[in-house]
Amino acid sequence: MIVLAFLLFLVQSCQEEGAAPDRKQEAPAGTPAEVWLHQDTLVLQHIDSLVGVTKARVYQDHTARTETLYFEDAPVDSANVSFFNGEMVHVGYRYFDPAREIWNDCFLKDGKMYFMRHREWNKRPEAHSAREIFFYFDDQESLQYARERYKVLGPQNIPADLLWEPMVDYPRTLEDAMTYVNHFWPKMRAHIQQKVKETGK
Image (cartoon, one colour):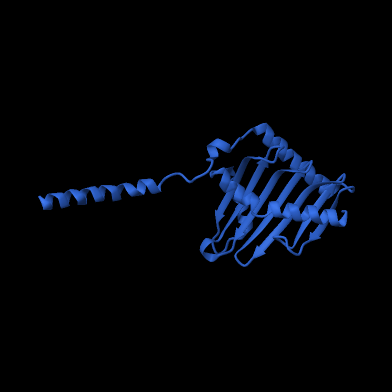
């Protein structure tokens, strides 16, 4: 009787242990891409067009101006800020450390960011890779859509090799996407606005 009870205990324990991997395979917490990703072609084309117009103004219109602002306590030491008709329309900044390099380009209209391009180069040998993400926002600066490309880089690859990869719909959660946006931008915006206020630029 004691042996039978012990065998039943072992069987039950094995069944519970066998079920454990299923619990570990639960979907990551957050808002899945199929819920938040809104691929409205007309909206995306409109935003892409605005980006093109802004770039043309920054680089070609003699009334536009670009200032390099320097900081002492910001996440990065400087940012290039472009103005058109007195309005801040573009902010570009870079972050460098021994493990990675990040380039962010933020496009604004009426004080709101409507598009952000994030480029990242992971330089660690065990995770050598490059990533580019396009973020599209609505007029309230709420993230609506994102697409990305990613490439594992071999020893002979350079980050620009990423550009041969196709862009795909962002596959992960909204919260995951926002980590890229929020890592630098909120602090950078505050520092830039304060610097512009101080210098009267």
